[in-house]
Picture (cartoon, rainbow, N blue to C red):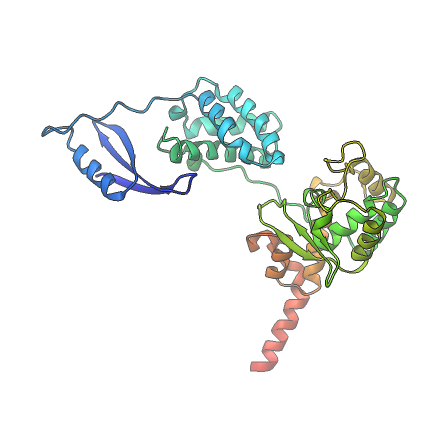
Length: 357
């Protein structure tokens, strides 16, 4: 029996793909209306009898190299540079491991499992293997929905490697004080403000480095607006306390065009400043660069985001409040901090108990 799938093209138009099998071979055709798709499917399931015209030949079998070449020209340019760069490297490696002349339609779940095993044998972390699989899965999805080259996605039939626990290390108030003191002594005069903004807003480093002067508002209430976010949605967060005072001082000393980057490189004003060396130096000076600790417990810049989330929860913020401030679509991303709100939950349950019992 013919099956009809509805999907939306890149241009936003609804299309209807009808699938049938004849003589054990799959055939597909796309129509702009469901009625046309249904009529074609009913006509061509009868093995071409009764004067029904013969079906077109089967779709050409494209190679993995051809698929990735088209993907690189049509899909990669739409992604952020931070995603595009590693995926370009991943494409090169996938072509080497799977074979550039391998037919896209012939790739099996077993081959993908072997790919995962080879990557792990080469020292690739489980989380990175998952990213390789995500890239392959997206390639298959585009080849199915947009190019109509194939009909199935073998990545869906394999179990992805289990990723290690995410980072949960956050700084105590005493550690925050030591870090800010070390940042103040840094030769990089912008480091302390950047760290203050990260702690106050829970923003990622990339989001902070993309800020422009027009994204900072002083009155009537201070705020930061992030446009270049991970989920591509604009997010505005309040700017309060020491971070707001430091920002006001910084803006008074650095009168720039509203479109200028907030933290530009001195050599290349259109690019953000690099704080890597200054950050590492501040960590060592603050005694936060411990040796021999588990990677998930090492302090990195992203730990400031975890610090914000953790102290929000310990201050009584709800999962929804925390997710909104951090820009998470799902509450699952902030559930790792839920154990920190037990005191707050105890108070809520106590109020309920006193009310009804």
